[in-house]
Length: 283
Ligand SMILES: Cc1cc2nc3c(=O)[nH]c(=O)nc-3n(C[C@H](O)[C@H](O)[C@H](O)COP(=O)(O)OP(=O)(O)OC[C@H]3O[C@@H](n4cnc5c(N)ncnc54)[C@H](O)[C@@H]3O)c2cc1C
Image 1 (tube, rainbow, N blue to C red):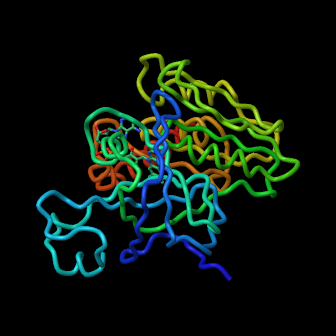
Image 2: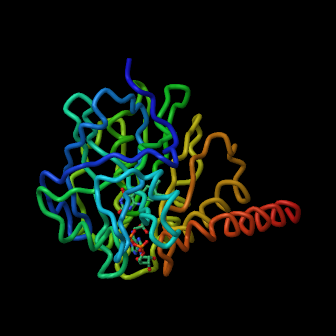
């Protein structure tokens, strides 16, 4: 029986080695990895993610290391810095997976690392975690996100239950930045080019234009935090969608590193919920 993996534990770390790098679009680079640590694992979801671990400059350790020991013995600023990424094309027999990294300039750790990575490079990670996949108790799925959520959307399209339908909205920088998405006949794929607009603004326009499907629908909506706020309003304030039918979260935030976004996430969520409650009380 396989090992069932849920939320990444604080202490577990595994190693993965880059085997190939492929530029799949102007905005995305795919790194393929071999990772014996996932052989035999039970990874049933379509949004499995890992916390890549980046060793800070000046640290006195390098992979392989014991994450628990590092966290117990080194000062906080010397702990590995985490960056969250979705696993795609997972093969738990061969022990391989891909990660599609958004190229977003020179800032940050993971994006720039992916741009210069080459076969043989190693990275450690905690996880995988994951919690969502399209299930047969729904008739229809609305999947929406920017490039950061595209890997999870593409995975979901590959695993649509028989007899269900889906509409997938993927925001990309320009119309020319489309990439290959195997789309089953039961699904419609809508590309949403930003063409210079703020991240997420075109996506919410597209989702709004799609309206509320008249079937039992599950929603999977992830990406830039500002888009999440607007989409929640569309679903829960303007619409009457049941929260149990929705998976929605900010995968990143404009102008913030992942550390800053994680630290401010709770406050952002509380402000958003208070705003939704106030709007609901007025209506
Ligand atoms: C569950 C989950 C799954 C995710 N899966 C993926 C995935 O498969 N692929 C992926 O690329 N990302 C994914 N992300 C988002 C990713 O974790 C963030 O984009 C992260 O901030 C990237 O780290 P970094 O070191 O490159 O940049 P950081 O150091 O975190 O940020 C540096 C600067 O870059 C900006 N920035 C960060 N991400 C983006 C972006 N996507 N577009 C434009 N500007 C950006 C920040 O606002 C900041 O100004 C996922 C996030 C979560 C929570």
